[in-house]
Amino acid sequence: MIGQRGVNGRAGAGLAAVLLAASLGLSACGGAAASGDGTFVVGHSEPDHLVPANTTSSYSFDVLGGLFDNLMTLTRDGRPVPLAAASVDSDDQRHWTIKVKPGQKFHNGEPVTAQSFADAWNNAAYGPNAYAANSYFAYIEGYDALNPEDENAAPREKTLSGLEAVDATTLEVTLTDPFRQFPLLLTYPAFAPMPKAGLADLKAFEEHPIGNGPYMMSGHWERNRQIKLVPFPGYAGPRKPKNKGVTWKSYSGAETAYTDLRAGRIDVLQTIPAAKVPEAKRVLGDRFLSREMSTMDYLGFPVFDERFADPRLRRAISMVIDRKGINKAVYNGTYRPADSLLPSTIPGHRPNACGEACTYDPAKAKKLFDEAGGFAGTLELYFSNSQPTYEQWMRIVANSIRDNLGVQDIRFREVPASEYFSMLRAREEKGPYRQNWEADYPSPQNYLENMWGSEGNRMGWKNEEFDELIAKGNRAADRAAALKHYHAAEDIAIREMPMIPLWTWAGQGGRSERVGNVTITPFSTGLLATEVTVR
Image (cartoon, rainbow, N blue to C red; front, side):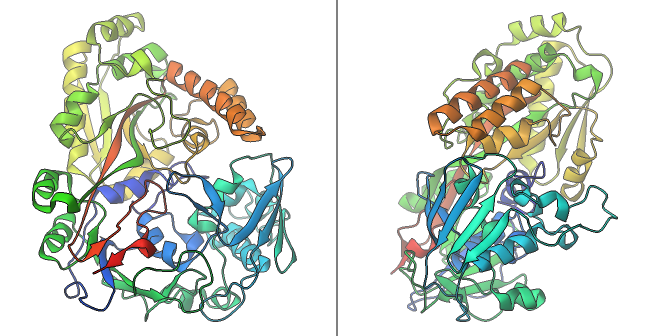
């Protein structure tokens, strides 16, 4: 995944995280993969930060996942289960009691307590600290007092009123509203604990994080080169490493990383460049690692622009996008054409929920387009320059709109990746734009509320019924009831189509002959480094 995963503020794991994944690059630094010492080397892009709540980058999560144990973790099929917690319970989905397992230690010997989590969360939620994952803590009561609307105003408080460490092993959390997904949220890396020593010197902590997880740092973060982790002797949790360490080696180009994988200079690469996939399948054989992912691409509309206000026009554009054809032409047939607003990896995905609206049908599309009154003026299509495939499929989409809907004046707006999201946040786009989302945690709510909810979506789309259905799903006492509401909300978004689902990414990685038992999940946990065996 990539740098700034946030898309819409509060739970934005999705967007930039994907952009970097797409442009994964490296400058091959360091020597060959370790041999005979029980360690292995993984190629990835350079992290941005290693303070858990100050990043939404999947490359940072790669490292943090070994250094820290969150209260909850995900099973391979995406279910939340306790990790550092003994239990996470609530009777009303708003008031939560968390029991922290006793006897846990940070890598410096400091005990892990309920206060370790409270201190870390308060530090992350405090607005002036400007942490990347600050908005993930908005679910907790008292967040607004730490984050005044006026950015020039001082916060009224320094700690969350809805957070109390009752004793060494008990954390009481009060949310602003009932939220059944809270245990899933606790799997997100931003909710890791922090030792007092780390909070006392965050600059030093950034270079040498002190976690509570199965691995600890070996030396400092070697910027733009590598980060070495070795097993923590005092680890008492369930994720004891099956190897003697992992080195996360930084690259600035995907091709270079792939070349090093082929040459045996690294042992694992989670993302092989799309253009190299046919070759990789042939060369690597059973060492080619394919997997489902939770990343989806979308085409959003600026519905605040009256030219895009008619849902029939938006549906018409969706129906002239040949998803299967683009998948074959651009992605070698490896991506999965969208049939829902959610990827199939998310519990609650409904096959063919999108139905006709996501089916290539130029004749029906032209009828809808004409009924909507057509489109006058220049149609501008926006995408970032972080991946050559974005321009490739945008050109195919443009040709189809031109040929089937008769819109002749179409222009491309290729925006530098560093400016793309700020442009969308400022709503400066004047036409359809590429967007994506990768799950912060596997729940329909994580996609639907953050991408389509009236508060903060990119499109300027507002639908009170949609918002209320999401709120009902969040408050629901059981999964079946929650899904009923989420599905009803999804149906509204499909009917209105303010954002078109396109396809789900395919995970395409590889391993060397030196390592086995390599599992890469579709969630923020990514590579299960502790499970890797070394020959």
